Structures are given as structure tokens and as C-alpha cells.
Length: 79
Image (cartoon, rainbow, N blue to C red; front, side):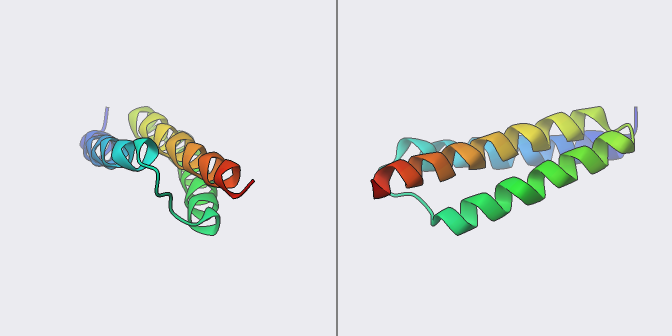
């Protein structure tokens, strides 16, 4: 296991934890921000998996899922 995998993974878990208040709050970021982050994070997750950086790929994938939850929540607010 590469030390870089641990560094990227820990950083992404911190980012994921930082998103929890936004998910629980009534105010949501714009849909365009959430969707762009979702797409970029899923691409990065795929890229890390091709480098066999599995912890990073998983943690970035979780971060992407959290951003997609924010996008869905914002879309539901607009209705």
C-alpha cells in the first residue's frame, strides 16, 4: 500500500465529514456546484482505482455520493 493512498484518503474523509453539516442544513449550495463536484469526484475515484489506490478511490467515491445527495436535496427544494 502506498503512503500517498493514505494521505489522499484521510484528506477526503475530512472533506466528507465537513459536508455533513451542509447535508443537514436547510441552505444548500447551487445545483451546478454540487453536480460539477459530483462528476469530478467520480472521475477522480475511477482514476485512483486505475492506479490501485483503493482507499483513495473509495473515500473520493463517498465524497462524490455526498455531493450528489446535496444536488438532489437542492433539486427537491426548488419544487
